[in-house]
Image (cartoon, rainbow, N blue to C red; front, side):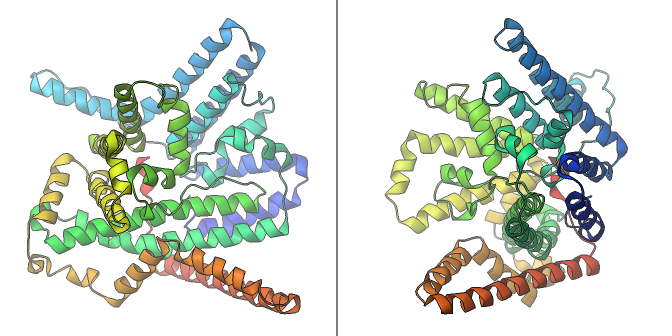
Length: 483
């Protein structure tokens, strides 16, 4: 089940909200835990059994660490926990990738090939595994206390709003909320607004650009015009941003409806002025996870320059691999790592002295070029796609698909997407708030009331249009199947 489905919107979510608020407080975590497993089991009972295995393993690992705090055994138990979690992730996500690469080696040596294990990738395993790892590591570092309540720890790992597409929520950020979260009408309404905006970003913007991106990337590179190649990668750049940030918005909104507060996961990454700035704005929870649990333990910036560059390369190698079991994902990560190293070498200081628009152009160019690797199935296709982008091929060779790119709907969506990728709406909103504060108190009351009505109408309209689009159009891609 996904958030952008009619089943979730009109059956699952209303039932969960009603049951949650009708249940006594002491039973709410249990009810949410059941709901989370039902949500996850929608994709298959076996997937829920795997999630339950992870929950049970990490609960008892944490308890064992608690019983052995300060003893030599604690570190051994932590190591066991890390190996167990990473082994689970490695087997289900990378076993097929390993066999594929071993078979390529065996084939070159004329040796018998290994059989494809045919393992199905469980949705969200990368997200909930990283959450479990953060709990165990923070427990070892004494940043959190042992969670003795099985239901509470299980809910932390499997809470459905962030289970399949993030953000990666750390136990330290949510521990108190598991037992003492505060629900209020204001928070609930804020959650509805945030969820509706995220749903609109996913359904009304991302899904529309997905059609353009898929059309381009399903065409053989040799048959791509230069315009369609560029149009396709720009469409994919907008699709993945509005899809991913839309899901994060929906998760944050759902959390608020249920009384939780999740940290932000996106901060207008396409206005970044360097790759370093981009990664402070894109998938923030993943960036911070790798920084705190890998980059800093490797030495971070406190070691020699060569080691710093190596640390960055390791982090981005694993960032690429985390996103998917493919060498193209690894190359995507290493390309970002390469430019992070280049900026560390002094290019960032040169960049700061250049004209600001050039800083944005440089960042967007690198990011967009890297998205080709992220989207392409293999290096051969990616290279052909680059050739189509930078070798002029006339539009006439794609005469049959030009109508998909040239129409009023695409023009309007492109304008909306480009504006929404910036802080313009935030600036307008903040300016309106400041302007209203200059009026008298009696006038402010009427302005706040009128503003509240406008926001309500906006939320209702976005939700209705999103629902209508889901009803009329069955094309609703879920790009996190590969994560």
